[in-house]
Image 1 (tube, rainbow, N blue to C red):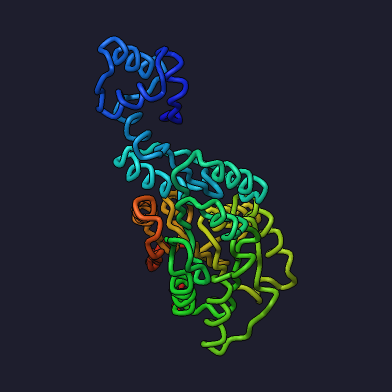
Image 2: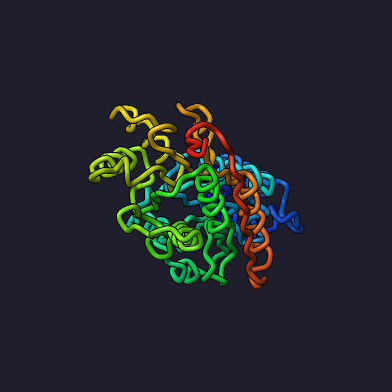
Amino acid sequence: MKQKINIHEVARIAGVSKSTVSRVISDKGGSVSPKAAAAVNEAIARLGYTRNTFAAGLRNARSYLALVVVPDIANPFWSEIVRAVQDRLEGEGYSVVVGNTDWSEDRELAYLKLFGTGRFDGLIINSVTDDVDLILEAGIPAVLIGERSETAQIDTVGTATHQAATLALQYLYDQGHRRIAVVTSETGSERFLSRRYTAYKDFIQAKGLELDPELVFTAHLSAEGGERLTRELLSLPGWKDRIDAVFCGNDILAISIQNSLRAAGVVPGKDLSIIGMDDIPAAALTWPALTTIRKPRAEMGRMAAELLMKKIGDPSRTPEKHLYPGTLVIRDSVAHLRS
């Protein structure tokens, strides 16, 4: 990781003035003696800087550091996005610092305070708090990952959640499912504006089905959340007659539910259909292989990096929003009731 540029430290080690350091690294040596120039370059090397990066940062008043904050780096969905961001930004000479909040508001606020110190040139974040004003107050280029239709002040990259959720629900419906449960996140933006639930409600009403509040669940979108939710599902009186499918907020949750169902003697994909969201690599490896909605993670990460570079280059530009459609991936976790 590139260190933050410090002209004072270079000048101290080289035994010269700050103006001398500035003239040397900006390629405007002028009256700087060869001895002084050599001392400056030696000091830069001792501090571990590359001369070109040091010079560029000083000329542009940039740190060439970007902060990327995600809620769960252990989830391959987020790690693939971070990797795509890093690959793109490194091509622009940037180093990436990754912050993992574990869905904690306190952790996110700590990262936002760090962001506000000016150590970073830009921020890419999937916000747990949805505190857009706090991000804007930092006055530094930022990009949100995740659909925020009410946020026009910040560049946004995400999935067209209503479309993606409706695609999953329509597939369940086409396979003969009518008693569909939905599980959304108990943390993050879902608390403020649950697009999955909105899509679910719209779909149920459009099909003339009964909206049963007891089939609407929230959970932590994790393996532990899946275990707890499975216990909750199976504790419903007469659950076999009340639920025939579960639409899950992400694949981690869906895979955990499948594992927990099998442990309880319930066969996923036969006794109870499961459909996920994200299409992480493990979705194809679990048993049964998980039917899910694919999100273009690499494309989202690259676009987030592109928007950040645009904002750094022109802070006054009008923010953009890029929402990618979900794609249905059919595997084995949904029963074909009609057949």
